[in-house]
Length: 107
Image (cartoon, rainbow, N blue to C red; front, side, top):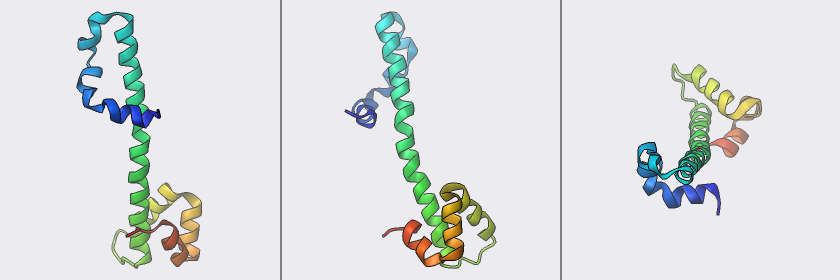
């Protein structure tokens, strides 16, 4: 079982597993359970964040590719550079179509 699967299986119990008062009188086992659950929650977060970062990069690349012409162009370039790195920014600058195909919004 993966960490993500453990998180999904027990997420409905988060309010209890994250409550040190509820687990306080249980001794070592409950203390370990509390610590392990906090670790599982933290480890499961990047999976969600990665999807959100990919979506933000896709939206910024798409806006630039379709020549948004807005006042936000400089910021969009910053977003592409921050999320996609030098590779994404360089590709978007040299070959916008290839960058859109690689990073753009998928239907």
